[in-house]
Image 1 (cartoon, helix red, strand yellow):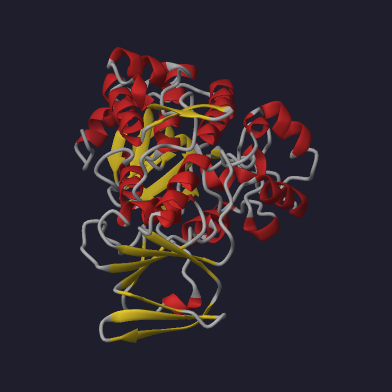
Image 2: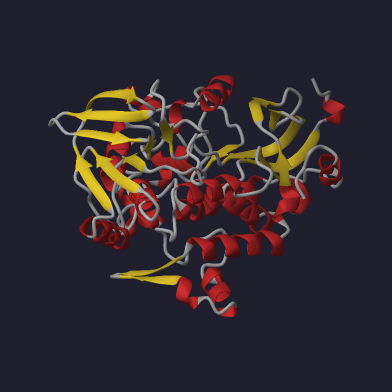
Length: 422
């Protein structure tokens, strides 16, 4: 156990180095009294945004669903300016009745530019967080990590789903069944692949693989298209307050509003058109139904469907999404340790104004939430890029209001000696 004297101290520690964590780190430095020596981003990967890059590559993403004003920079038109400065305006893809969307390459290159320009890699500590506890001697929190303890005045949870992928019962024990964000290797060769799923990830993957092999896209329901993850008014905080915050925090009513608002398992129009063209050209097959049974036969996977059709593939790739983040073991440990309030289906109950996670007994702990965990307050865009911006507005303002000097002038140098990525 690291002793208190050797524990590193920060003004705010962000848990998670994905899009939300990277964006929030900037807001903390730019919009609060904290400077770069006061802010730490703890993430187990060797670089910021590694998980996002890996998932985008695995599913064959070529453009983002979000518009060009939603990115990891803090200025709305920074990505557009970056594209113009680098003669890459053609990578701002036109969308009918919707602002242009960036290509994946443009989005990632701009993100790298922001990270380099703002020296965000210097804020990154490569480590995993095992536990978060209240500090025994003073206000704030202590993070127990794989590189030692970290004391912090404030903490922001900006975590993803933690590698917990949704798998149908028939695919749990079967050989040759892989999840697109788990075991699947996009570079592995195959002659026949069955892609399971009915949303954007499944459609992207099916189109990508159909360039080199026979692909069947198998979905339980007809494919539907929607331009964005939810209707655009849900990006605006006034709309969120008027339509979501009128219901009690953590309630089933909030959950139902969010579920109805999110365009789950839908495909953007341009991808839907590309998919239909490949089907028309015979490059890809679309099948609907449910699986009655699944078996291995001579190194292949056979799916027997409810309407009698059978599908045979060298492998099955699941594009079936994530398990709920609310019941992730890490989230449950934190909630139990800090006695945090949970609502319907385990949703964190947050302060709508600050995104601070409420305690059962009315105590206040300086723990804030962004990403999928914040959906009951931030609304249907919470897990996506626009959600990072809305969360950043509330969290940065709350920390700026409550900030106290942390006296951590040498904290960065102390961490640099303990497995920090440069």
